[in-house]
Image 1 (cartoon, rainbow over the protein chains, first blue to last red):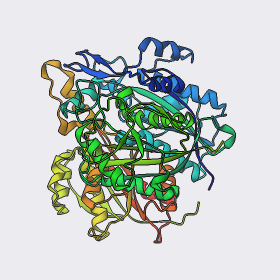
Image 2 (cartoon, rainbow over the protein chains, first blue to last red; image 1 turned 180 degrees about the horizontal axis):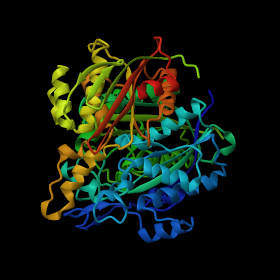
Image 3 (cartoon, rainbow over the protein chains, first blue to last red; image 1 turned 135 degrees about the vertical axis):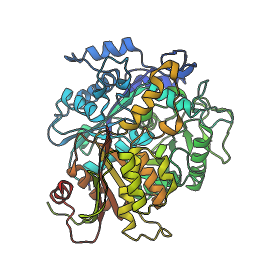
Image 4 (cartoon, rainbow over the protein chains, first blue to last red; image 1 turned 30 degrees about the vertical axis):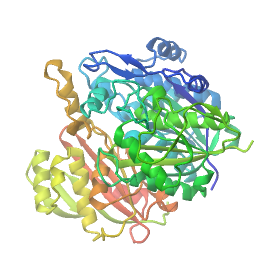
Length: 383
Length: 205
């Protein structure tokens, strides 16, 4: 079975429209989160990291679109376009397309939205992206709550390992909408200040918006300098509760153990954990329990939610990209918003951005509604 | 196309009828889904009160999975490594529309967490995982129409890599009071070949 890599990548976000710009801003500990008071979206003020509509429009027009596209489609097409053109891959029958999203164009259900409600079908989004770039295969759409982005990377690897595709483009995204914010607000999960993952004074989630895209390939002729190999991946369910994290971290613990086993890597060989860290009391506590059960409590760890918020279907993909650059730059980025440990077990949270002699492997995790969890282990290329 | 794996059972719910391995086990005159599924729940002696909190998609997926897995006589004291791989056309749009209705009118604004939690298609997998203690691989995919090829590829990948011993696969769709469930169990031993052609034949019967 051939090795599979994550290669060319892009992030469209409040912190920039290329991975390099976003990573540079994170290195400078700059957050994209800001206070927003827009009663058309939510009655109360909230914190979010919104993509600048004017810049998005300007970047998207470079693609010379001939039809009308939704905000999410503009974000995803802009992001994916950069990855396709950088990789210089000819889109033939051996090239797959995977889309990760939780809600897609759900804002089209709103009676005030200019697009027809039919646009909210996720396969319509899939067809739009397929047709824009002339993909020869239908899009595979993954909608598995907040693990969708990282699970999509695992699925791309599995398709390549099954010899269905040689290359897979993965694009993930969700937009800020009244639909999503009103729902999280009804759960009383939203914080009214910038989120503080793992901190003693954390008060909940900020929802952000991002589109991110990567190339997953087995062909070493198509590797970007920051490419990583996918060593092991797993996605396990808590079998406990549909909206509350497991008290024992069961599904996350099992996901990590299974990914370590497949990767043939010991916990001591993990140099960095890019965790989920939504900054809700129960999620962060659950993660601390799972990481301790796996003997990973000493490994430097961050949550990137303090930079761009929780970006739902994009988050796992976005955080994988930042993790790749973290290894490439041999730099551990600060877990923004963290001051004092606020979970019941020890964790090695990265307090300030620092250079490290050499980083080789990182673990990316995510957890979501429905009791789903995913863990993937990545390794930097040797030269 | 050859395969090392086998389809050991399948369950269908559509047109006011439920069948298991091709045999009708329940049918009903109710044209409204909520009546039909409640009658089916009773007739099948499902005995799982959480069922009544579920949204339509979860009720449909849960009952199909329960009828299929009950027949497997699983020992739930031991852990059954059965992965769950579902797909559909409409994701959770049926419940999404309910949440949208609750927020559309500012003078009548009442979003509910009990509804919002079901605005994700994979919640139905969570419900089945809780019932059968499945700590296993799970994923929900969206396709315009039933995609046997994809399901075969993904189930084969999970079995080849020993991520699962069995895979509960299929299609569960609920949209505008139209419902359809087709679930099947893929195992390492059996007689009916796990191929795209065979799955398509079962789906179309």
